[in-house]
Structures are given as structure tokens and as C-alpha cells.
Image 1 (spheres, rainbow, N blue to C red):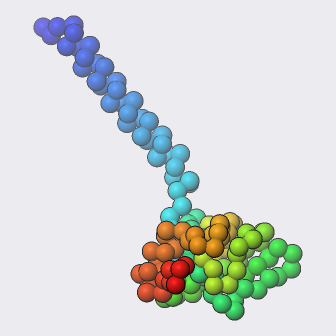
Image 2 (cartoon, helix red, strand yellow; image 1 turned 60 degrees about the vertical axis):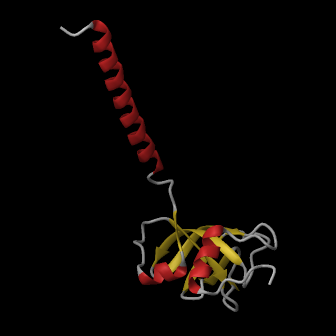
Image 3 (spheres, one colour; image 1 turned 45 degrees about the vertical axis):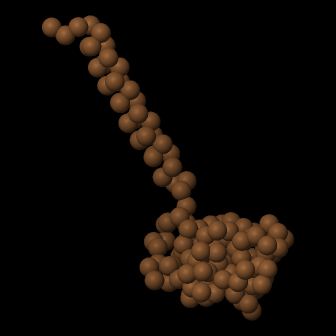
Length: 147
């Protein structure tokens, strides 16, 4: 016969393992809609995501493509030097948003156009998101702010 102490230890370990597995499953379930993957314009051009997938796109606002529509509607192209993706947005743009500047947008890619629900721009003259810098460096078009 097993001792009572050994039986209790096995029960505690089994309950802890079940609790850990359950909490991991609940966290995965909660994060399934909250995780937005980053893609560069070149990655989107190579393998377009499905229209129902929400993700982030980042790069530079292409010069000469910023068009302000009626009200708060804006359209422009975002590029990483390798590909250019058209973007539409209906909302108020950040103050430092402009042509030739870095941006990150959240939204969906529908009918070959990125429909943004949120646009983020740099918060000062020298900042650019890490993902955007990496995408621009991969295309060989990154310029350091000091140069």
C-alpha cells in the first residue's frame, strides 16, 4: 500500500498540471483575436492575407500618394522600397503623419487595398518603430535619421 503522504503528493501534482493546462488554454483563447502580426508591404505583395485577418502594416508613406477625401477620409500608399500597398483610412491622422514618414497601421487587406482602422505615426522626429526599420533594412532603403 502506498503511504498517504505519497498519494497526496501525486494528487497535488496532478491538480497543478491540470490547472496549468487549463490556464494556458484560456490565455490562448483570449489572445486569439488580440494578437496582430506585423507585415511589410513586400510580404503582403508576395502572399496576400485573407480579408478577415487583422494585422499591422508598416513602412514609409510614399511621396505624392497622400490624398485627403471628404471629411476624415484619407488614402495613400505605404512602401518599404520593394512594394507599395494602397491604404485607406477614415479617421483623424496623427500630427506627425506625412509623406516620406514612417507609419504603422492596423486593419485588413480587402480587394488589394489595406483598410486601416488605426494609424500610428512616430512620436518625434527621430523615432521609427523597430519593425519598420527592419523591413526597410531588408529592402536596403533605410536611412538613419542622423544622415
